[in-house]
Length: 172
Image (tube, rainbow, N blue to C red):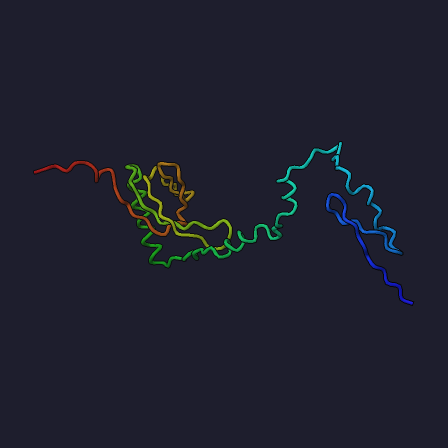
């Protein structure tokens, strides 16, 4: 014996569908007497703003930082080149020349390798400045603005201007 129940609902004055009782279903229509009562709100919690309520349903970024990781992986670095004997000899000659004229505080252009802090490799940068001091024991060159360059990271240097080059020449 098959028993089919027909679901019937009535419409409340506020437009809600109130299901009538269906045989065997005790939950239907249980709240019919309170569905149209005004909501008073919580007495213990402040009312949430519409903006804060909407934020509960905003999209969730499950992979926070993923885009940054992709950009970091795609960022290119250069491999540090190891100079051969001939290059080292040429660079040492330039270091000696710089040490000899250091007291005159020459203007020098350096090409240095700066290691990358996040991944293998780095970048070759050009640093230009007036030399304050050459510290051979720590293998550092200190520029007038306080920049310290490791001699081991310098791959080339060019003395641009010596103070004696700036003096006016004698006219004949």
